[in-house]
Amino acid sequence: MKSVQTLPDSYREIFKMNLQSDKKIALKINIGATAAMVILMIIGGFIVPIRTFFKMEPFSDYLIRLGVLILAYLLYMMAHELTHAVVMKAAGAKKVVFGFTGMYAFAGSHDDYFDKISYRCIALALLIVWGIVFGVLAVIVPASWFWIVWFLLAGNIAGAAGDVYVTVKLWNQSDTILVKDTSVDMTVYDRE
Image 1 (cartoon, one colour):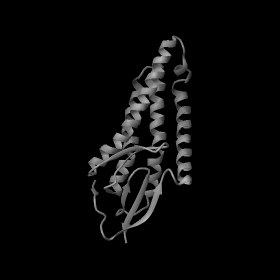
Image 2 (image 1 turned 60 degrees about the vertical axis):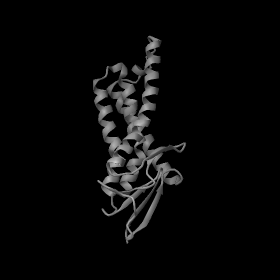
Image 3 (image 1 turned 90 degrees about the vertical axis):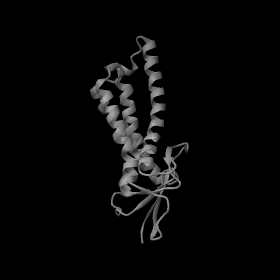
Image 4 (image 1 turned 120 degrees about the vertical axis):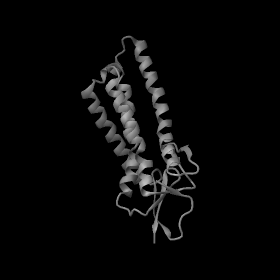
């Protein structure tokens, strides 16, 4: 894996994607995320009935589970972007920037161009890493805590919809492409 900080002279822009301002792309990503969430909620219901999460007796236990879920999801959102950043740094990024657009949180780099393999790893690392973590936790936690972990797993998969979209979009591009990911927009370059 490697990144470069200077675009080679022989490279030219072949296309751009903005996951937020391009309404068609944003709609596709949000439909995909919603579909993934619904499917995972149905699957989870077959494993442990969702009523176990909403069990109110004793009410203090419910409040604890709800509080843990909210806190865990906020921590996960940070971990999601940090996972992108760690892989960007491993790919040679000099500086990673973080932000929130109101619709999407992001980790990006204004100074780096990533090769195709590196960019796939950056995009999909969180889906794999956190998918494994939450999958293992879902198996070992007591049934009364299953839905907290399952909501995090479903959020991980749904939250990766943009990453999956970009990976699929780049799939048939040549292996020589370079991707500049500054936030929610990516510019793809290739040799002339």
